[in-house]
Image 1 (cartoon, rainbow, N blue to C red):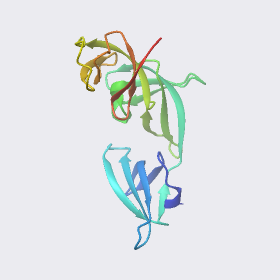
Image 2: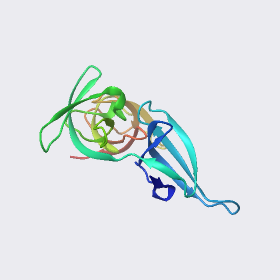
Image 3: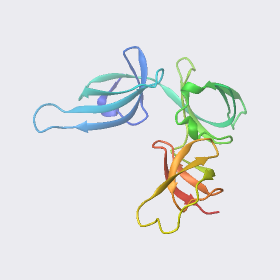
Length: 188
C-alpha cells in the first residue's frame, strides 16, 4: 500500500482487479476544499487510457515491478523476440504488450516491465526518441520554406510521419516515439 503523495509517472498500481500504469499526474490544491491528485492511467492488459482522480492521502495498491533492458532481435508474426544483453536469455512478447511498436527496429534497446510477484511481462517501452532512416519522401519544392511546411515521409520501420521539406531520402532523423513526430535531422 502506498499513498497518493508517492504517485509518479511510470508507477504501476492495482485498481479494480486490473493493473494500471500512471502516464500523467497532477497534484491539485484548490482554494476551497481538500487537495486531490488528477491522473491519467493506462490499463496494462487492455491498453485503455482513463482519467482517475484520487483524494489526497488516499491509499492505493502499488504493484512491485522490475525494469529490465532488452535488445529487440526480430519478429515472427505477432510474436516479438528480445534478448537480455547481460545473460543472453531470450524472451517472447506478444505484439499487444509493446508501446509505440511502429518505431521499433532491430537492435533497439528497450525497457521491459516485469511484475515481480508472478514474473509476468506487463509492457515493453521503447525509448522516448529513436533515430530512424527516411526510406521514401517527396522532394521538397524550393521556396516553400516561408512557413513550417511539412511533407509525409516513410521510415525504415514502415511508420509514416510528417517531416520538414528539407528532409530527403536516406537522411537519418530523430523521432519522438510518444507523439510520433519529427524532432531533428541527425548529421553523421
